[in-house]
Length: 454
Image (cartoon, rainbow, N blue to C red; front, side):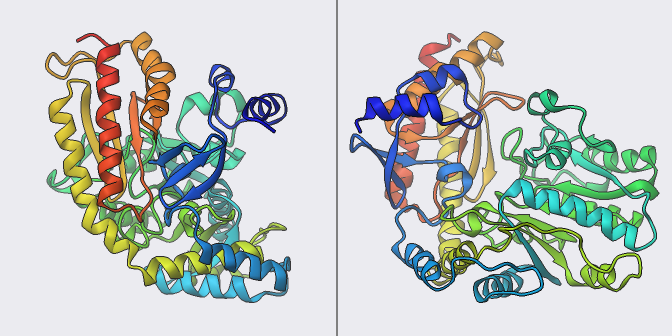
């Protein structure tokens, strides 16, 4: 089947995710193979995967060791559940994750995606409080512009009106507080920052005895790679401890090396009560997500006469093939010191992006850490002119997609609160790959400036 037929069949039969009709009408690439940091399409063209798929292909494409682990597992045991029994790869994966997770976060409930992991965290928080005699603790606090998933519960925690509004009404009791935009580095005592005091004010406004959990990402994706200021996460931990609230670290993007650490604790220094993960756990080679919970909380729920067991599960939760892939992927990441590569090259990548900011009037800000960045765009930094709505639409729908095609560097244009370019290369990217990535970004920014007058 030729590329024209493939595209025609895709348009007729394949429902795209988060894709506008006009984008689906274009000659989009159809990929057939992956090699390292590159995707190869039907016409043999190589594309640098500067977004790691969707922030997930941490170990790069075409790993024969990971593929071999999947094939061997399918041959030995294609399926068994974790309902009243267990199988070896799920046990091995859970044990390995417990060894890497901070503090006493030692119990993993496997699911199949990041949204499902957030859903599981919501349900655990509610059932845990009920088991401890506090059934009124059902409300959730999350941050403005934060994305936590697309299932109805996770979408309720999400604070992006554009993707929530078509599906309302959602779960009640969701309170959104200011994020950390504009706060980075040493900003003085963290408990005096407005992004922290607003959380305590929301707790009082809702009633501390009604709050089940606070959800936050170590580096917030929505609004563009928001790195928290010094002391922010310890302040969150202190507030949650003060009012008996569970602290959930949503690490669907941030865990398994994206920030140069196994988990967000390496950046924040804080042990949360729960961690959600997904993407990087298998580097995208198989669907897998999970909820890691402090062992004390699991024991207290299980031992409570009002609890007994966490009433949650799924047919594919902890699937043998997916967990075998996770073991192979995480083991390779550890054995090859991939996190060390991120810690060594991340600051260089950040500095290079800052240099591009200095040389392009269309760059307003560069944010991020590790291998996770956002380049926020504007019309002219010299005059502080922002993009008009029409200009922003042109950049996101026309200029950037054409620039991705022309340069052969795949990134993501983002409109959540601003016009941004999201950058998230595979964690195995070396100096040569990062140079090619930066060359592409430079060309994209030039295209934006050609399309938008100062």
